[in-house]
Image 1 (tube, rainbow, N blue to C red):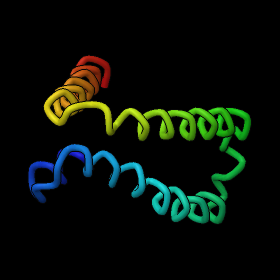
Image 2: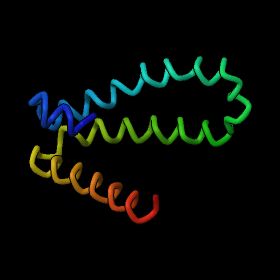
Image 3: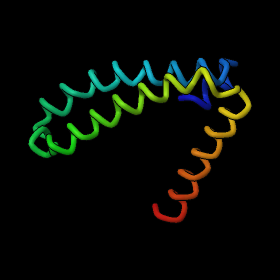
Length: 94
């Protein structure tokens, strides 16, 4: 979501990161009944999901607090670096 907002919509890097964090909430809420009613719910490891929830909440809080302290250029470079690492990982280990 972040690259599309920055490149196509002309949104600033800080706003794009914040928008992305906020957009995850309704996406997760919408996915919950899909998994529940599709009989895939038992396949969800609730202990692992709880760890993911705690980590996500802590990470979102820390990331939101740090977002205002990172200059636009450096933030853009960090996002580019993360996307590059993920892209290379997907090419090497599909």
